[in-house]
Length: 178
Image: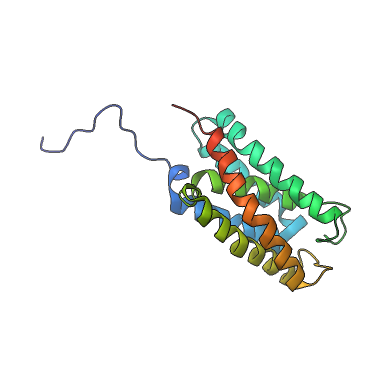
C-alpha cells in the first residue's frame, strides 16, 4: 500500500471551519434576512441551525457568539432609539436583524478573524464596509434612514470604526484556549 498515512491527531477540516464556506453562508443569510425579512425568518433560522449542527462544540460556539451578537444588537437598538434607523412596522429592531447579528458574530469569529489581527484594518473596513451594507439594506427597503444617507453613513462610519475592532477583540477573548 503506497497511500500516505494520516496521523491520528489530524482530522479533516469541517465545512464550518473553512473561510470560503463561512463567507458564502454569511452572504446568503444576509440576503435572506435583508431581502426576505419577516417572510424569510424561518429560512434564516434554518441557516443558523445549520451552523450549529456543523460546529464541533455547540455550547462553546454559543458562548463565543453571544457577546458579539449582544453588543451588535444593543448598538442597533441604541441607533434606532436615537433616530438613526427606522425599521418599518417595528418599535425597535426586527427578528431578522437579531438573526443577522448571530450570523455576523459567527462570520466574525470564523471567516473574518484574520482582519481582526490588525485593529487599524478592522477600523478602516468597519468605517467603510458596514455603512455600505446599511445603505444597501436601506435601498432594498429593509430600513429607513431618517437622517439621510450621507449623515447616516458618516455616523455609522464613526461608530463602526470603533465597534468592529471592539467586536474582534471580544471575539478573540472568547476563543477557547485549547
